[in-house]
Length: 196
Image 1 (cartoon, rainbow, N blue to C red):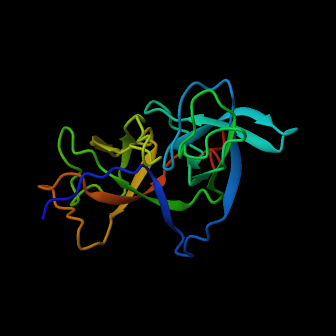
Image 2 (image 1 turned 120 degrees about the horizontal axis):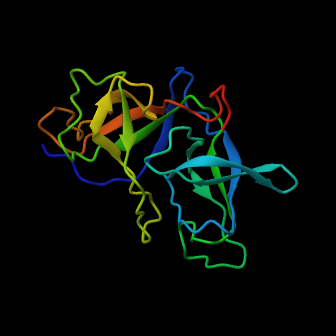
């Protein structure tokens, strides 16, 4: 059975330690001067800035050239004075968001299948890049995916492949595109010893 092409970015589902996903979140903020939209499931990076007298770190949407990632957006606070029917972070608006507090969070993400599929027989433990965000403004979900043609044994890539999602409707064979994977962030901002 062919996989459904339904990218939803990076969805927090578990913890690589086996302790289970506790749902503990860290509050972050997008700055009003940030001209990129963000969505549930969007990967973000720290900017080094903060608001609320240093209590809330500022993040921005990560691009495929970034390696030190803070996590993926789990939820967004309603926009103050904004539209209650907008389910994503509008560009150039200050908005609070939540990302997993634990850098060992396990995410589920779909591969794009462009340039070939990720080889399940050899890819577990390899690192891979992700695609840039375009986002779905109707559902509010990210459209980021795993860049399937980049899987390799190199520390320079930001996402670590852990396993194919064990689900009846998910075909992880090399002949099937858009497989869902369990992944972790390879170079998390929290654990990177050189700082951000």
